[in-house]
Image (cartoon, rainbow, N blue to C red; front, top):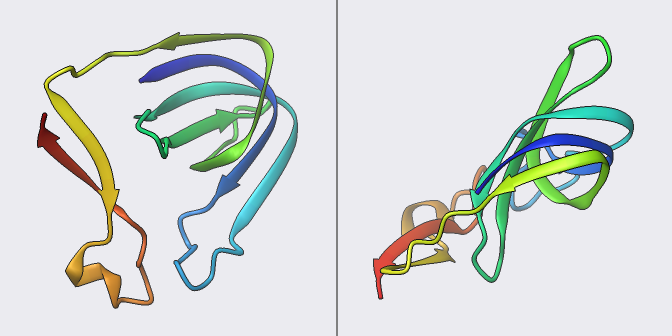
Length: 109
């Protein structure tokens, strides 16, 4: 999926967050341009966004929710009918305190 548009609210988990320290969260309020919004829309949607403020400064991260559309959101969704997207803990990262988040697994249906 892909999207451009604008929002007035967003809640993002920043890149420094880990499975054991998920406190790296940013709550935004104001007018932001959606520079990029990409991800997968499986049962547990996984989206990342990059937002630009009025001065062109950008911030991005994992969308935790709370994206509130301001003027428009042009969303493009592609369907991969022969593939199934799931998120699973990887054996190598499951025990790693620095990561520990479920990873994308793509399988044929």
